[in-house]
View 1 (cartoon, rainbow, N blue to C red):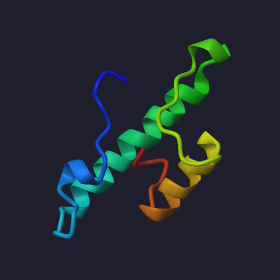
View 2 (view 1 turned 180 degrees about the vertical axis):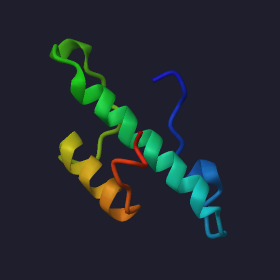
View 3 (view 1 turned 45 degrees about the vertical axis):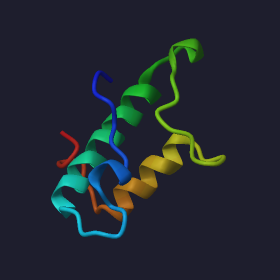
Length: 76
């Protein structure tokens, strides 16, 4: 992925309100980046989008989709 994915801190979410639609759009970017990464067939081509403890990419995608109520239509 060409653009760096943002974190909540980069949205200024340190105790102040942030625009939920901006965060939702960023969540869509994260899921798409994970999908792109999971499609790669050779392990040496895979890169870690993020590391969250010992969770697999599939588990992280599931959680993000559930938390932000993302549909397949949102991810097109």
